Image 1 (cartoon, rainbow over the protein chains, first blue to last red):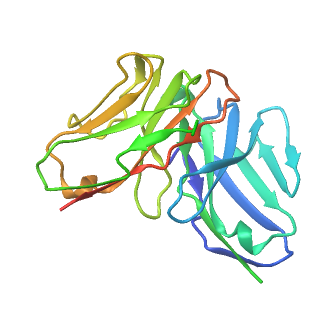
Image 2 (cartoon, chains in turn orange, cyan; image 1 turned 90 degrees about the vertical axis):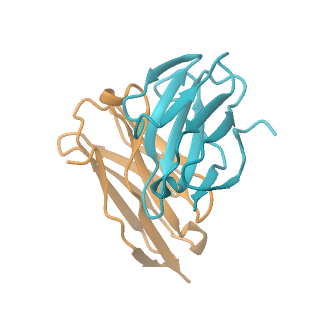
Length: 112
Length: 114
């Protein structure tokens, strides 16, 4: 079982819709969860992080954690064409010290 | 520019040659990470440093890979006897020492082994 798993997509949504991205993780002891966005040819940039104690909302983005099922989700409301990118889920896994372990990413395409 | 800086941005080398990449982290960051990313995949963790100490290196891909951070500032990643399968983007990231600390990435070094 991979440490962090994501559906590679592509996930296609129309402009203005809600995009829902998910990932699952294997280390039950993980405490910190991160969502990065990566445009083609660019390096990843952080969108949000959450601790194991709750969900978080920031503008159009909401990150949710389900510890019992070991998955993390990212909701993007009012999706815009500029949101088209690959979204990487990352987890601080105890077996890697404090390094972030990434999933393979989900490609999101928002059509206008 | 106070972001993470990587050099070179691109490197083309012949199979069997050694290559070395440099990463300059954000100045106040004491943690530094190296990742490899291939097309269609997420960044794959290789190793990380806290100050000059290399705290995790079991994920380096083979004994041809090594990394140093001699004075706790910049870091180098060396690949010896390169193979075509080493062709990838090598990303460096740095962060503060905190559970919530965001890791900031450099622009990466794209390696092509011919």
